[in-house]
Length: 227
Image 1: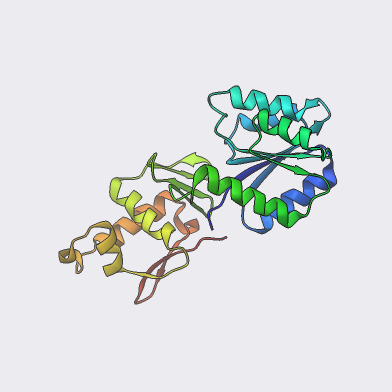
Image 2: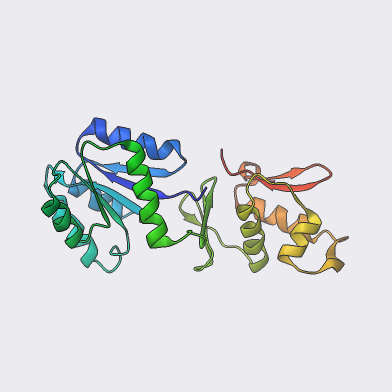
């Protein structure tokens, strides 16, 4: 599963908690805000992949916030799913014109919310194949960056390639030969310690004993995707 960072903006605590729990139950990293001011504060941290936003907020209209986001060059790419108690077609059209990527009327079925969010993600990010996530680690293939619990981790080219191989096959035992073929493409290395040394260095940079990479005796190594 590709883990997403989702920001829930909803002033009603019961609705906010319900939506937050639904996304967390399927493995996403969720933060929440109850007002426009709290939303802007949250956006100063780690940028979310998706914002699920209520239109009616205590300190303003979600439409205006959506418009402001779409005018910000650093935030305009974040897709927005707007929630509202207004079901008229004209309101939905207005929301889309203000920059919302989708519009869902209250009351809504939680499964429909999850499905619509998935559809937005596929439309905006494709398969999200450029970003791999698990165990607090985010690997961005295009940007060639790695973060651990939102802190940058400096890796060598081989360590980066090795981590990518692990994260593309989570919870799967990879033999040393398979790792060599994927990372080094050199069968002559099969009898060397290069895999073990590189794994050891990678594990150290990813928390040492807390690293999600573990040895499987007489087989190889495995990346555990969940805590």
